[in-house]
Image (cartoon, rainbow, N blue to C red; front, side):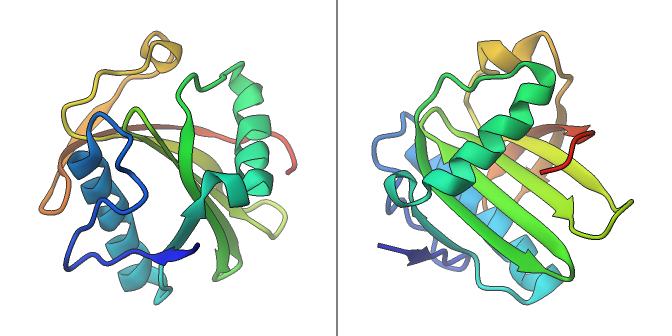
Length: 153
């Protein structure tokens, strides 16, 4: 079942199996607020079992850096706004991955990693990326990093 993420009243719906459900819900709500404010799009996620295509695409893109996320995906979404395809996957360990992929040739294309407040840096990302901190009313302290996509997806 799809779930429109509410960034006013943060809910852990769909994230209950995470060891950091409140922090992950805050991270998800933070992303929903950004997307609503920037693109006027309602951020709606679905269970990982129904989002296989999105999760598979994100996994293929991560292969550019020989990355395989060890944690189980809980939810994902894909949508298009302003000529950009967005893919989001939220993982059980508290990791959120977003892909911004401009559909026009020569546009910006990148993968972003965001760590929920209180989670450790996953082993598969620890040695490969430096994480910057940002404060969020909804998510506490978010640590993030990214890489530029080189291939065509």
